Image (cartoon, rainbow, N blue to C red; front, side):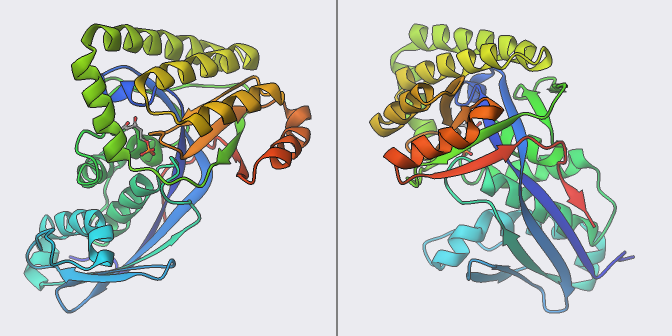
Amino acid sequence: MILTNLSRASAPAKVVLLGEHFVVYGSPAILGSIDRRIRVSAQIIRPPQIIIRSDTGFSASFAANKLDECGTNLSEAQKFTYPLYFAAHEVISGSLNAKAAKLGVEIDIHSDIPYGIGLGSSAASCVATVAAVGSLFLKRDRHWIFTRAHRAERLIHKSSSGGDCYVSTFGGLIYYIRNGKNRKIKTRRSVSMILVNTGIKHSTKALVSLVENFRNQNTSLFDDLANSATHICDQAALALTEDNPIKLGRLMSRNQRLLETLGVSTVETDNLVRYCLDSGAYGAKLTGAGGGGSVIALVPDEYKTEFEYKLLEKYSYQCIPVQIKSYGLMKY
Ligand code: PMV
């Protein structure tokens, strides 16, 4: 029996506070869901098609009764939305109801998460799509949704740690270990940062393979860096619980130096991080894959206005205040 004809879900963006890249190889990372979201609505349609539309203007259509290959014959919009199609197709083909009735789904996406700057927009769209399409057929729990969203995200970069999908599904501030035991970090007050968007879009896949090459060529150095990253995350989890922003800031800056050694930071990012520190931040680092993207700065509350002012004096980068929110995936 089909439960409903229309369902809606929304999932948050994230920032990686610490531990990106090393998390792919089993070290922990600390990620937080933030107050920017992607909203997806899914509706049953009769023709066996999966239609994906976004408020950014693209629209793509695929078969629902068989899995279209991701080949060169696809349009740009189809290539871009293929992971969402794959996720929706997996949900539909796993549902006896949809198979029996030969149904299709129309998916509409509205996003306030900038794309390609390290905020996990792809993961959030996979999570919200699996949740919205899944609820058309049966009640699904978060773990079911996370697993499928992560499978879809792995089409974008195959060694994805799953951290982005996990935090987008479960929400909050998470101490995340790939295939390990994840836990929520409890804080006395909500954590907020200033995200500085350099506007330089990155490819997570390319940067993850750059790190893979680095690791292959510098095995023992990589192990040392990964051990330091683990220590930094453990100390940062304590600093967060103890509400010690000075210590947290110092750890963020140490983490930045590890990322610089890996080669995923750029000269512009290194300079921007230093400028953030000179402008009053407790700590600053790139967030996400690097290669441009965004920097997060931990700035004392009373200093935030002046900090933003100083940044705008020197750079034309966009400053986005972000707050860690506990809400993960929401279904309506
Ligand atoms: O820049 P993003 O949002 O794609 O973040 C990627 C985080 C990495 O640690 C580099 C990759 C991963 O799978 O965790």
